[in-house]
Length: 203
Image 1 (tube, rainbow, N blue to C red):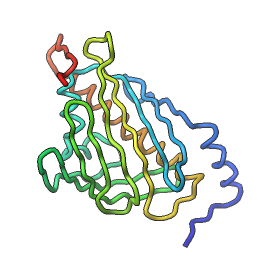
Image 2: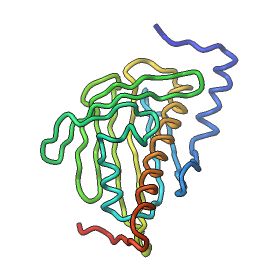
Image 3: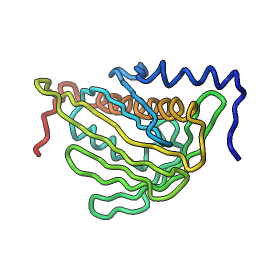
């Protein structure tokens, strides 16, 4: 059955993709910029932030799959099912929420780690028809100990979600989750010994 919204609410929500294609999230010390746009029945999302922390600390936080539910908003369960070389199979449960609308996410994803720069993520099974994306980590030229962290991907729910909800819903969800990841990186860095520096990783 199709999900139908009241006409007045449809008119208000219809403005969101036009007015809020780019969102700046201020829930972390680093500025998080999130962009989202429709791509067919899916939503393409990109989130970026410059973080000041050692490369190894950032990488360890990104790949701390068994503890993601402790610091990433919207994730209530995350556990590793299998490790095979650089491919890690992870079960994740959570939700994406926008105002009154909640979409429960229950998936198994495959994370492919390409140290030191990228982590690819794709859905293996669950209630997302499409999830194809991942993290990219790049050293900021001329800035010691600073890295540009990017998450980009295409997401499509397995059940029909009105377009006027899908774009702001996925943008809000990725904004919160990415900001949560950045906050955890900052928290872990703050616990390290003063004066800890980072250098660009070897290719």
